[in-house]
Image (tube, rainbow, N blue to C red; front, side, top):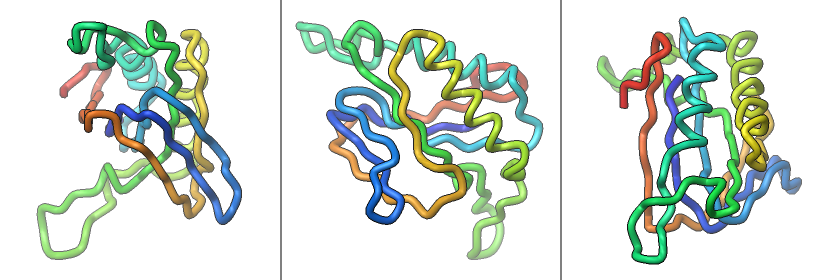
Length: 152
């Protein structure tokens, strides 16, 4: 699984005119399931996300995790994160998990995060979504989990 993490003051996902998910302070997580991903990658990613200290303490250091600041997660499935741009001029999506695998994995990630005591909102799998956010910092990270290990 691959994710882009953006620390936000607020973020929302719209499908058409409908807001399907919104948070105030927290992390916007754009996530892609890749071929070979399983619940093992989901659990490693959820554990890492819940424990990352990406929020500033009173001294301005990134020392606080999402629970310590009362933040929330907004999880948005984004299969394009698994694309390869190595050859040609058009992205290859061969690395992306098929929807039949990706949708339950993204759902399991959301559930695992919620089980850790953090509010979780989400997009709508497979929909044409518009994401709005107020980036905080900006602070943005890439998180790669493969074969049950954090790679970045």
